[in-house]
Image 1 (cartoon, one colour):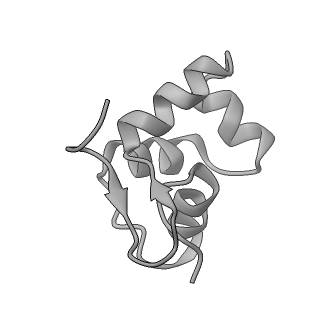
Image 2: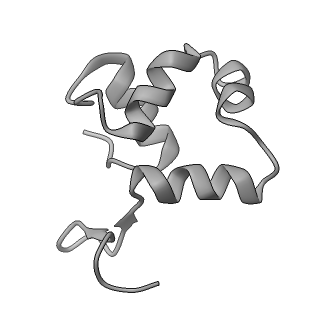
Length: 75
């Protein structure tokens, strides 16, 4: 899988995950989104919204979740 769907932050060498990739990563670790949310102290519905792209993730808990999932860089 290369090209489309991957996000790069210039100058950092980091590749950020899409929501689909983050969910796939959890699946490979044999964890559900609900298990991940509970073990990290987050609300399942908020985590699900972040992964599905429904929540903007610009600040607060949603941003924190996106960073923990590897979807955004920390500020």
